[in-house]
Image 1 (spheres, rainbow, N blue to C red):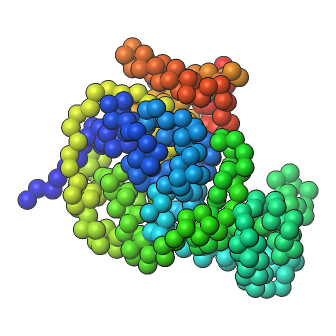
Image 2 (cartoon, rainbow, N blue to C red; image 1 turned 30 degrees about the vertical axis):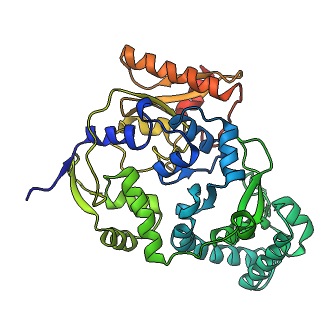
Image 3 (cartoon, one colour; image 1 turned 90 degrees about the vertical axis):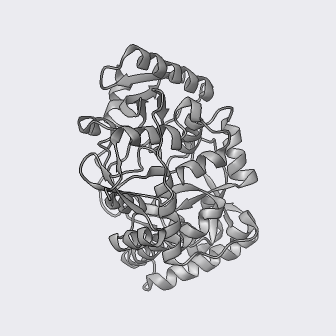
Length: 394
């Protein structure tokens, strides 16, 4: 029996439908958008809000904050590739038992070594354990920012670095490392944001205080299977290498998860083997659509191999050398450029290729839509691409 083939055209249609980017397929809530994407990138706070805005109608920045900090249907969690994401609440246990646990193990080694190297303590593991315990005791009395914890807890005192005259060598406080490690294990969580929605200024809290009943972490195999199930549903088809890159794990973990799920092999247009969920169904043709996506948007960061939606010649213009994507402008399932804002907050397009008149009109419509949604808020980014920098100067 011939193996199923999924063309690049259908893969682009799947982005339109499953990623809720085509106007006819947009969703109505923050939780729905997050589940559709499995997770939302949150390294830059504004990415969460802008990713939702691109995929939902009638949602304001305040609505996103309400789901994050009041309803708590979605929660920020450091996980795959030591990256901060927003997870649906009921998927936290999967991350805690797999991707987050993997990062926690490597972080412990890194922190312990740095503590000894900086002369803060002769035993880095013992220092970390004592700092963790002091932090948990303090947070049991109520939420606090990292700055407040540093002031109150001598166990969190100290900096690493800043011992040379190199411009990049600046002293780094160790307190956030402790919070990061506790967060990876699901002991503490990022609670209410202490600043504007476009900024990451978390107030830290215990998981019990934030969630009430805390589910125990899934075992490693079950956790990875749950994450890969989400990836297949959102991004499939894709190669095992795509999944391994997104998951930030090992080939062995991916192979086991695909087997546990009964994932199905398919042929892709570039000659590679892709994987889909066993209950995967085809997506029919979709009307041409336009979208403006934020820095590190989950769609752009979903695959290692992006040739089916991105001209390789555009990569150096839209990604930094570490593979971090800046803003992107999409027409009919392909990235055609990026977008920036002027000083008044107006969204402007910067295209890398000619787009037909209907496409240009649709992109301009999305620029007006996003400008109105932002209401004058100018969003900064530390991941500005070459094209974004160029656009701001012209």
